[in-house]
Length: 374
Image (cartoon, rainbow, N blue to C red; front, side, top):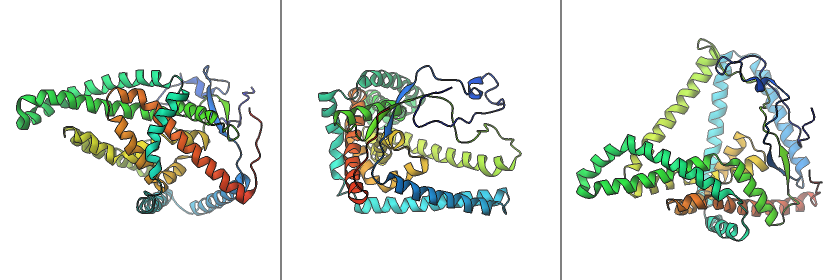
């Protein structure tokens, strides 16, 4: 079956029934399965020097894989996992060095990005680049706000009322209502921001089209189909070495960090008015970077390791953008309508950086060679 997609996808399907999901998930085994609603995707045109850069990356990757394969031959499962944790720690150290450099050196040079959320709002108002984004995202935002707000009020409302009553007396209930609205607004924005990669990619393509940058980006038809580079085993025996030295420790570490984060965030939520601001300032880098992820994930096709490096290497940019977004996101209800425009602002900055990158590469490697649209 010819799916007519570019680049061609490599399908690698599960070949045996899964104990968790059961054999009814037959589309995972069916190479002919096609999602009835294909999504428009984005493809970056070849840039000057892509072949040279890609060749060097592939050489380095092949060398690393060969060295790892040779060393793994003489190791047991525990030694291999120890080396895997050591690699993660080394990557963490490298990222912390990039973070320190970005914080100490780059804030002043990247201060202009602070104004791009507001530029995104005006640009979107003039050009309508988010299309139906405001309506669809606002509906989702309102649904999340009701669900998150009611859950927070039921779980933490009584305790918050009791604490506020000790210090504020009769105005405690009114203050609790205001705080619940602010908290539900923050949680709803977090939910919608986290689940809008396709909308962000659509906005990115529309912004590039409006700016007449089609020589850099083309739309492609992507088909949402289960795919992967290797067969994915969705279960492991609890007595296996893989479970004991890999799955279980990773699960416990990740969940422990998440629990500590939640405890800290909920404690901040109990602080009237300023608690939300504290959380926004602490997580401004993550929240700001979320608006740029469609550019790096959909257009630049970066994997998780590359995304982490970009995040820490340019942390000052994402933090400044996140702080500016926090000002807009502090306005309940209105923030849900304006959130698509924050993707527009991120797309404007991404377009600016892409043009600068093309200029630098053109000087080094020669002019860009455009290709036909597909």
